[in-house]
Image 1 (cartoon, rainbow over the protein chains, first blue to last red):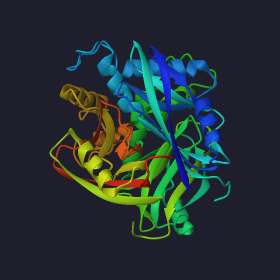
Image 2 (cartoon, rainbow over the protein chains, first blue to last red):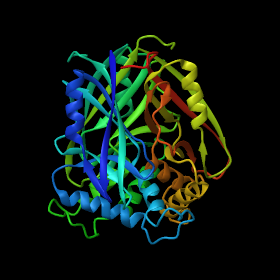
Image 3 (cartoon, chains in turn green, yellow, purple):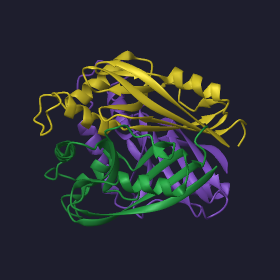
Image 4 (cartoon, rainbow over the protein chains, first blue to last red):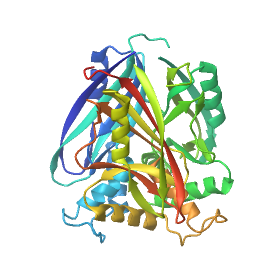
Length: 143
Length: 143
Length: 143
């Protein structure tokens, strides 16, 4: 049993879903681990991680629209000193979460056909977001 | 330290919460692992995993009603070519999540008395849903 | 590779976010594990775990206000025999989740500067909440 860690940095340009499935898959290949558990962790309170449809771009826009409507900028928040998009960003982060856990088999994440891994940026200004990846497992395919 | 993986398949018949706590518990027993970490991962973008009350069936219905109201079928979505229940299903999946992490002690998940594990089906038509289970741990009770 | 488990008990006094980042950090230090994976699991269906801003107290209040508004006590629920705050508590638990996964590096959780770990209590009456912590890893810093 062995483990490996790395960090992915994503430069964001406003509210959007940024896919990084390929980058994670490549890193897993590099580690040589065939069977195990991948954990992704987002080190921020106004950006989050989620898994969703990777085919139709309209799905991503609808997901963001839903979050914008559920926790809108126009609402009255007690915490408003960091701009109108700050408190909505914290709420949207709470709803989507900071971590993802994905088993690995045969050297690949066990994602379904339509699943992509996204960083969800909830702030309007450009940010540099950091995601820690942790992989625990073995270099053998059978468990 | 050792690990084990399996897949649970659940045939769904429309929007509902499908409990599979017992199936997971039985599989953990079979592995012989006494202390460790269980991960469950749902391979879909219109069905999700959640833990909630396992006693009163009315709770399950209220949870589903809340999700139906929060992301209703009647709303206008840009992505609507797969039916009126498709985009709401993606949103409800985003809100509830694809993975669960549950420690194992003395050969059992450390679930509270009232906690059950559910697959949440968000589509109206019957589906065959696949959940990957990964267990990492040891055959000894003390750590 | 080794693992360690413990339980944190938090006495709650009504709906609020109770931070216990320090307690978790101290326990990780005690285990001597330098590199690994931490899992926190909340054994309840009306309290949950979340990571959010640890600086401005107003953020915590705004998060709770949002949850109160999203799943309000005044709504009509089929399940209402355990009090008006019970079903809203189950819904808020569903939205925020029972488990957190956080990588550990150099003996510390890889939390961002502004991230704190919170137990979210969703019931009005005092409760004794139990969180299971599981840590898997090694006593070496490099992986």
